[in-house]
Image 1 (cartoon, helix red, strand yellow):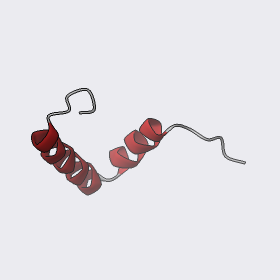
Image 2 (cartoon, one colour):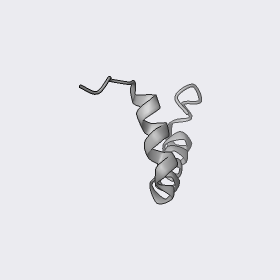
Image 3 (tube, helix red, strand yellow):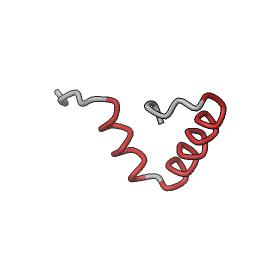
Image 4 (cartoon, helix red, strand yellow):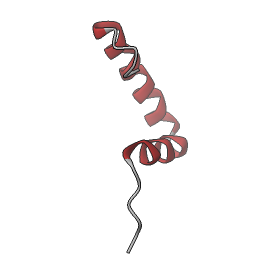
Length: 42
């Protein structure tokens, strides 16, 4: 059985393998930050 990791580790691994997904993720993150200004989340 595969060991479970945390969400952050999964995201880093997934986005490191898929450039387009990484770009989309960063764009969405920046848009959300511009709307709510939640710096700790960003």
